[in-house]
Image (cartoon, rainbow, N blue to C red; front, side):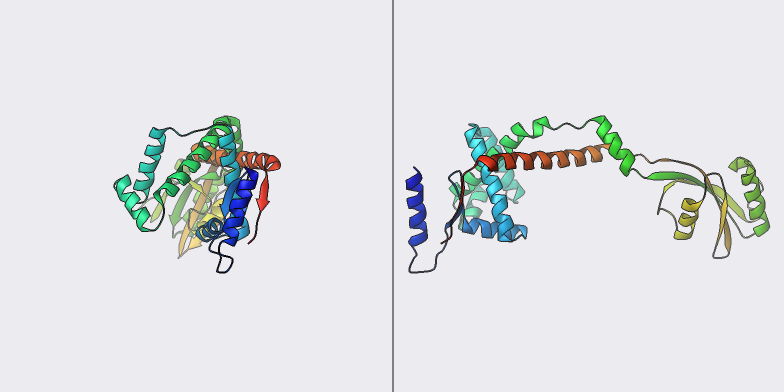
Length: 279
């Protein structure tokens, strides 16, 4: 069988010896051929150099070889569903329309179906060897949440054009009066407004106010003048802002998946028979 494949390779390389070589087998991975045209196409479509493209195609061939070695197969229903989904993903109403468009582009329908089956086999292998073993604990999510989570400050404000009033309110707050009591003298009659800004994260407010909010000590009021108006900024407290646990879990799963896939490919590569050919 080995000599037969070598003969095929020889014919592929020498058939156009007196003309321009159209294509050739550049790499074999456990007797799975990778054509030069496949490498060029992958490089072009993924905006990478041919060396990187070849590496990715070798990895794919390693996984395909292992799937076949494991005796994995794709049942007709799964394959037909995948074919229908592929047709719809490419904007076609049905498989027949998709087939006609593919053949119009000069692509053999059987070749496309073969590539799809190979991709499904690889996906099945990954599900068997990797995905079903991936687990992320609540503790891991909480750890990332604390490390990446942002803080939020509970911020209140007073705005007035009366500096004496602003200083009086500021002194009440320094004495420890609750914000509601300290701002009783802030009324519409004396052109003063006060209220709760919210639980804000860094960068959410106008730059001068944001700077005051995040440079202030908790419970110590600060003032800043903007366009002739005096703002008393009071930070009552600080807490950890809530984090998106589902998003963090998804991020951790992707990281673990990439790590496990790399490990599997390296293991397969260590025992694989890979040959490189040049015309």
